[in-house]
Image (cartoon, helix red, strand yellow):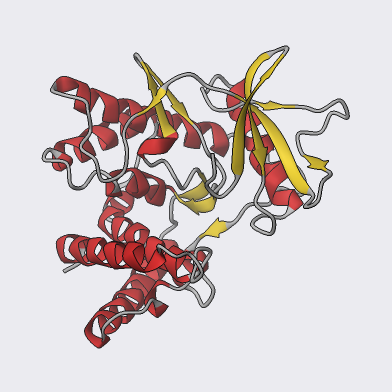
Length: 296
């Protein structure tokens, strides 16, 4: 499987595992090690996330020799089926839909809660989905406002950047809910196995706003006919485990908008992708719809 990393399903004496060959240049060695340390902690604490397997040296991260040397890691292969695919209707029906989102909210809150209580290992390093990482001069996923667009759309993106900059500054001034986040809990990264939920693919995890984590899951489900009920269910499940202040909840619309804009930055940073023009146009359409609905 090829996404940001190349992933193979391999069989070992201890069962099936995911062998990841990490994309060169995307993360530093310290950042890769930190991702593995975080997953190891969550697994020890009972969360159903990939568990890193140590090499004979005791290290989670190793170098594989070859024509193009690659850093590699080995993770437990988790059972389950992705909860859905982007741009396809969810296959769940009736009360199972809201139950699923309540469960996602509970598991996400538990992940944040465990992380808040964890002492980070020395040298811990992950990308930042903070104000600079979202709307600064060099965002983590690229400048969304620089995407090829009409003058009117460019003005819209510049305007929303200015508005979100002010809103984030105000939020930070009162003490934002901020810490380690998964940052990519989209449908493909939530595995469903009967009543069990498992989170996978921590590759984009980093330091960011907790509401951004919630917004990421919600964004990919906005076209569902019962999207408001799914949003309410996720928030209900989350706050049952970890409280959110009114000031945090008031930022949800802004973070849904910002999450939609990050995909424009992602597209802008991949000009050599032969399919990127069509994807960028789709990302822009979605972002404009989200802005109109959430930050008119």
